[in-house]
Image (cartoon, rainbow, N blue to C red; front, side, top):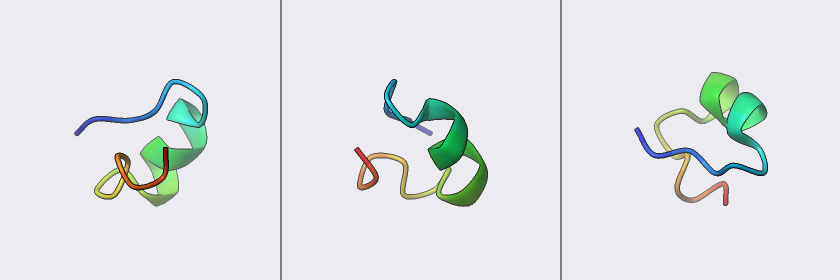
Length: 23
């Protein structure tokens, strides 16, 4: 579960699985 620091909160909720792609 790697999330970007930029959208860490947004990605963690909607794309926690694709957190890396949401960078």
